[in-house]
Length: 431
Picture 1 (cartoon, rainbow, N blue to C red):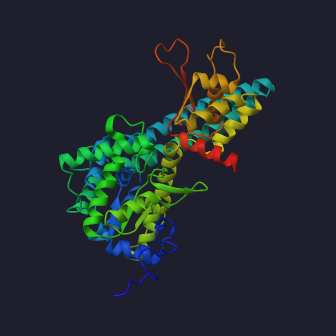
Picture 2: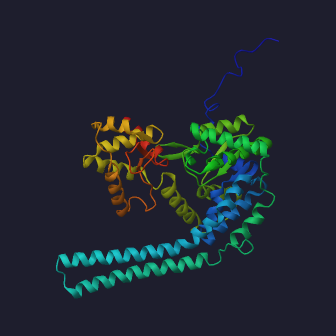
């Protein structure tokens, strides 16, 4: 038989090796929702405690509509049970904390009003009128916060026999949870997960700061998905509220789809195409395909929770605009050397040694680095007060010491969550 050399296996097409760049169609999502594997992440299940009762019910109905295509990696439930109590407590206390914070803001606003009134010699009766209006607004807001909190969370309980989330989740996941890895396979997966963290290979390296082998948790989830997809030889839809770069391919600050490395790994392990959606997009995509109705406001509530998670978690509470403003303010105040050190540290995987700091700043060898981070800390506080970053935003630059914290700094570090954001800004500056 004559060998055909014109159409051999080496002849490739536009998407043969670049499937991650193909934009999913309605037909693609229809296929994976009706014939593939739909795997929710632990954050999807935990966020059920953060949604309103209506949004929680709609998401659970959506998962139920997937039927036997729904499959939960065993590691997802490990993470769910490990974090359930703290998540539940956070959800229950959020209203009380918000009301307490609002009371503090009210007191601060009244002090600000009093200081201003004294400076301009405002008549006492006018000051009292303004203070009364101010207190009325804050009292109304606090009352609403408490009322909503009591209404939404009064039935949430640590008791699994009466917790409405568990009551609804248990039948939805019955028979749809994967088995744990065998001990030998589990140990190998942990080792591989930690290797990927150190080498910055997806997924999971953005969790590098987690204690012990916690950084390998994302890889454990991924490994279990790979095994099940290979067994079924099917496409995968991974639903996750995690928006970090170790899962998503980011373009111009937007998540465009799964990382190409993950898409290729799924294919080589016997699976099909990999799709990823946030819970909000999952509801929007699945509703018309699986023909279940969404109640008004559910998508918006889920988007609210996703937005909070993104603002406070993905980059430690920082956004590109906020970080750029920090850099601009530092430069304006003649602290461009701090900006240079932050960018250098980010390039060096988060740490700038003292010698490099001296070189970057052109400091004489005997100069002390004490107080070096003060301008950064001060302007960070200003951005918090202006509402540009949340109170929980991480510290940008921190002094590091080899031994005695009272001695000389051995260098400075940028928080791990900020490293990719700083590097993105650096890339934009170079382009």
